[in-house]
Image (tube, rainbow, N blue to C red; front, side, top):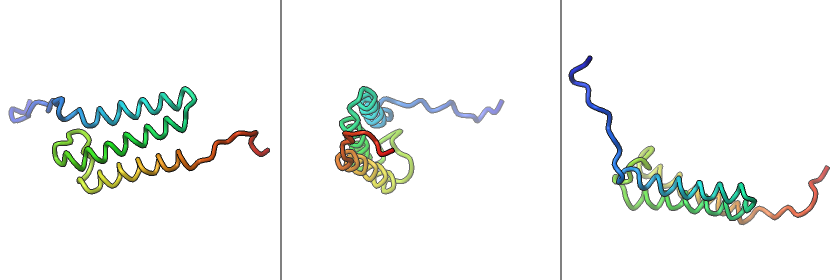
Amino acid sequence: MDAERQPAHLSTSAEITPLAVVVIGMAAGVVGVLIGHWRLGCVVIGAFLTIGGIERLVLADRSGLLQARNRFFDVIALLGMGIAVIVLAIVVPHGGGNPIP
């Protein structure tokens, strides 16, 4: 065994919390989609992606496990995806009839 080997880094609650907020919120959105409220569920998913982008912007280097790349990329990716999902959920028309054969 290597004597210089460091023990695995254990994540603290401060590192887990920003990501946990986003994951729990997105899970709530998925539940909304699964029970039949797809538009509301998608808006919730988009909202929590946007919240993740705001967390990454505000918390900077203290955002723990929410960090994927550099801060600029993370913020643009999360905000872009969040806003895109919200806009698509609002813009997609409600399909009321039978699909075209």
